[in-house]
Length: 305
Image (cartoon, rainbow, N blue to C red; front, side, top):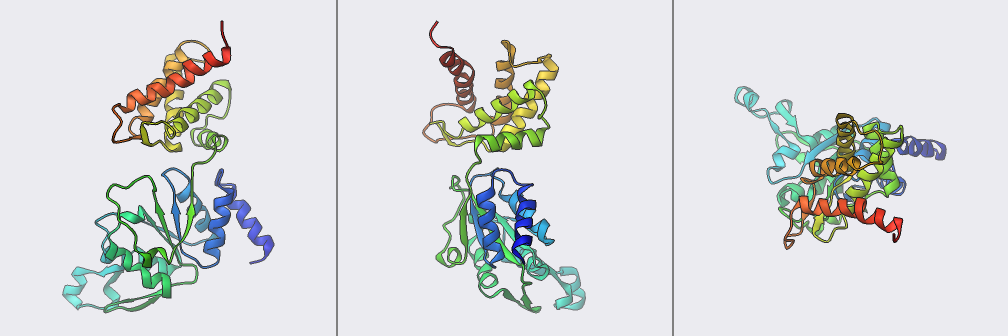
C-alpha cells in the first residue's frame, strides 16, 4: 500500500474515532504488520469503535466473541451439525464453523472481549492459529487463515472478579496497547455527537456538566471503577429530556442543578463500582460529586462575600 493510500486510510478512520489518534496509529501499525493484539483498558474507551472502523475500511468482517466460562474450544472453533452427523456420519460438509474458523476462512478479525475471563484450555486453542495461521480440525482437515486474519483481544485492567491469569504462551503471542480514557474535550465531542446536543447554550451546558461529573467518578476515593463515557452520554440525554419536561431553558436558576443530579442518579448509579472497604453508597458518592460541581466550585470562583 502506498504512503498516500495509508495516510488516506488513517484519515478516514480518524474521522469516525474521536480522541484516539495515537492508539489508532499504533493499532494500524500492529495489524498492518500482521500482528495479533490485546487492547487493555476500561469499558467505553472506543476499542470496539476503532476495530470496527479499521475492518470496515479494509472490507473484512469483525467477529465478536464474549470471553466467559462458557466459551469452550468447540464454541470457538466450530462443531459438526448433530442432525447431519446422525444421517451422514462426520464429514467436512457438516462442519459448522465457529468464530475462530470463520475469521480465518474469511480473513477477518476475531475480537474476543473480556479475554481474561475465558477458560485457559479455550485460549490455548488460539496458540496454533496465532503462531502458524492454521489449525487442524478433526474430520475436517487443515483450515488455513487468509492473510488479513488477526486475533484481537480486550481486557479491563480494573476488573479482577472472575478473571484468570493469562499464560506466558498466550501473552507472548500478543502485542499490547493500553487504551485509557479520552480527554475531557474529546469526551464532550463524543457526547454531543451521540446525543445530538450540539446546538444552543443549554445543550452545551448539559454536555459539559455530564462529562465533568462522569469523569469525577473515576477519581473519587471511594470508587474502584468509575463510569465510562457511555454514562456521560446517558446522563446528558436524560438531562435534556428532563429539561424539556420541566420547562428549563437555561443553566441559570435553582432548578438546573437539581436536573443534573437527577440525571446523574439515573445514569451513573449503576455504572460505578465502589471500593470494597468504602462505607457509602453510589447515590451518596454521586451527590458528593454533584455538590463539588454545583456548590463548592461556584462558591470558590465567586470568591469571598
